[in-house]
Length: 301
Image (tube, rainbow, N blue to C red; front, top):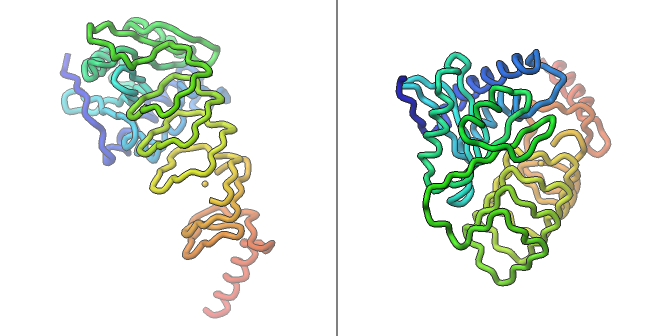
């Protein structure tokens, strides 16, 4: 078999990787759902943003993204999230349909495990509709931990003989625990429940939050200077004294230079190539204003 290697993806690989990912997952949808545009929503068969170059760029920048190379040929990609030293997650793996069934996927799993010898627990999920995936992951040593009609979760534990850190907590019940004046610098939380947790007077400088459910969360009195918010669904979010689809977002008493809204300072803000249907400024239709403006321009020509 030709040599398979993993190379770190770069931003200039985004378009090629996106095209290959779309081709792969669309082929899966066609096979398991009967059509690419099925009414069945299965995010394991067609993951969010799988056809978006911007999502690929985000993943290259913020996650661990490898190109799968067969000799000099790009044949797929694998995206990982490494939490601490002992826990890893295979977020996505895709292989060009033309190269499937040739042992590429099995070798990629082995190469990933070899690249992170300290990781003793790997997890992932797939669709129960993808019967081939179920067989593949179980052949590679993954065990089912949770299953619904929409998703099958897997975990693989590796016994490598390495010493386990005394600060590693796994499968622990820390409900109602209190940490006061605790040093948790560089700690990692993965596959954990923090529902109802209360964080106060905390230094989270340089922290990373990814794949988190923050529904109905209160974020108040925060310094987020220099922070980045990427690929976040903020439908119905409200910002006061301090961006969005479906439910409306409210902005009040904010200094948002370079943006726009109510009682806000918006010097030099621009709106370009946007759908402004129904948009109003002080009750006046922006569409009507633009129409009047265009008519005046025509008169001058």
